[in-house]
Every structure is written in C-alpha cells, then in structure tokens.
Length: 400
Ligand SMILES: Cc1ncc(COP(=O)(O)O)c(C=O)c1O
Image (cartoon, rainbow, N blue to C red; front, top):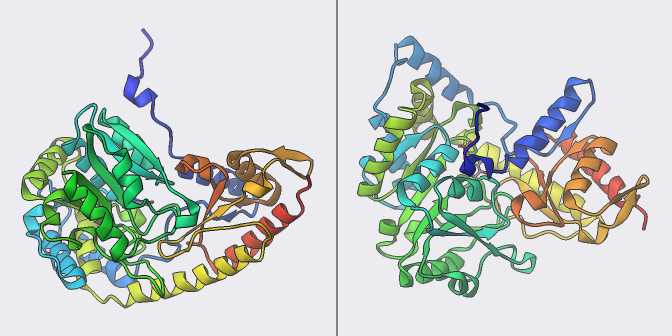
C-alpha cells in the first residue's frame, strides 16, 4: 500500500523563502553569478569569541545531553539580558531553549492551541506563521494591513476581527517581511484591546536588536502592567549574533506554560545542541560590540537600499524601521512585458528577475501581499549594488 501523507501535512505550503534561495543556489551551482537577496540571514561570520566558546565547550567535554528545556546558565543569561535591556523580570524557569526561534514558535503554538482556536495574524506575515498554526489544528485568521500605515495593524482593525473563538494574536516587530516597527504607543493601544478581550499574544521579537535611527523598539510585555501573564516572547541568537546555523532560540512564558513547553520538547527533540547553547551563553554575556557593529552596517545598507528604491519611478515601500528587509510595491509594473515576457504576478516577476537578471528576491504573495517583493539587505555592498542596478533596469526597461 503506498504511504499516505497526513491531511494536515498535505495542506502545508513549503517555505517560499527557502524555495527561492534553493533556486538561486541551483543557478550558482551551474556557474552563474547570482545576486541573492532572498535569504533572511546575516551575511557576517559568527563573532570569533562566540566560536571560541563553542570550541572550549567541546574540549571541556560539554558534548552530552543537557536538561531538555536547556542549560540553566543560558536561561539565567537570557533573563539577565531582558532585565538589562527592557527592565523586565523573569525567572529562569520561564525560559525554554529550543532549536532556533522557529522551533520555539512551533512549541509555543502546540502547547497552547486547540483545534478550532483562531489565531490573528496581520498580513504581510512571515511565511511560517500560518503553516505552524495549521499544524496544531487551529485556524490562522489573516488580517490585511495597509501600506499607507506601514503595514501595521490598527487597534480598530484588531478589534474588528475578534470572535468568541479568537485565542491568540501573533505579532512580529520589527517585521519580517515588511521591515516596519511599531512604536511603543502603537503597541500599547493594541495591548489594551488584547487585555479587554482576554487574548494571549505570541510576540516574535527575533529582530529586537535590529532597529535604526529615529525608531524605538519596545518589548511587548513591558507596555502594560501584568501583560507578562498573557504574552509568550520568542527570541534567539540567529539574527542578533549572526548565528543562524547554530539553532538556538527560546520562548519565555508564564511558568505553567513554560513547564508544558519543556515537557513537550522533552518528548520531541530533547535538548538543543549542547555546544551551541554554550556558544549562546557567550553571545549573551560576552562583549556586545559585535551587535552594535552589525547594526551600524545594516543601517548603512538600509539607507542605501532606501535610496536605490526611491530612485525608481512608481515604486513605493513602507518605512524601513528595523530587521533587514525592503518590501516594495511593484503593482504599477505588473501586466507589462519584460524582454517579451508578460508578467502579471509577483511570483512570475521574481522568477523572471532571477532568470533574466540573476537576482534572487521573494514574491509578496508568499507573505500574503500580492504585488510586493521582499529583498533582504543582509548582503554585502557589491551584491546590493549589482542587484539594485539590475532591479532598476528590469523595471524601467519593461514595456506596456
Ligand atoms: C520573524 C522570524 N521569526 C523567526 C525566525 C526563525 O529564526 P531561527 O533561525 O532562530 O529559527 C525568523 C527567521 O527568518 C524570522 O524571520
């Protein structure tokens, strides 16, 4: 009998960002120079003192299982870092270390949702949210936001979609894919609706260290008294310390929830890699100069990309307050011909840009926003310069 795929897994969409980056890698493998703006990972090397801590951990024999929910020293380093950065107090037992923030999200959703629960996800959204919600049997409710409001959900929009089945609001600020960042005041207005309607919030703060001049980041639980009771925080070392491959992320939640997330993980994957956890301790407790340096470099690139996009007629984009993505509107360029090929969708646009100009980006449709393109600026200056020359030519040479 052929092996049957489960209904839930059959309904999943594969990650579009990983699919575009795989296509770019295929072209590179046949010798093409590809300017890759599809990937959402810092292009910097993991700082050397963090790598040295991993080597030291291996040599000291820290190569065995740890407690399933993670090393107590790492949990302590995490709560101390939240206290220092945001003045917010957690107990180490509220932290569960996972195999990356994506895994922390999956664990948190699995531990708190039942089939039929509704989860509100503002669009454009990060590709994995809706799919991870679906895996639990809960229902993602996509709430469209407007470019004119920098793709931020308003309190009115949030209040309007709450039903008796609504259980959770999923927030990502700074945002992947839009790069927009909610102000503390905007978040507080949302928090009031959350409390009034007795909802919980999954706040993905993986880009909390990547925000730029003129913007201010606020961690969601700090906005109102007692908000910690209804918020699960998600974060990790991937973006802040250029550690995507090490696979260390975490959730911080009320103790009762954290205990269940830890139990779930003990049956699922056991502990995250012991060596990576030691490296993460060094990342959080060691010299933080690398964080400031990487942020400064990202800010230069953000300014450059903003300038390049603003030079192209009829291209618009929201304010780029944080993370490392430009999310630009190509609607007035759809329906046109590019080197004889008529392009009607953002997906076709990305595929033709890759084929004709060897630049990899990701279509807005995969983030719930047709007519937009996501370009990551976690790429060096040569790649950015070449990619935006080609994007400009591709757009401006198209014909009606
Ligand atoms: C918004 C958001 N959350 C979570 C993640 C996952 O991070 P990690 O690599 O730690 O699993 C990403 C990675 O792209 C992301 O952009």
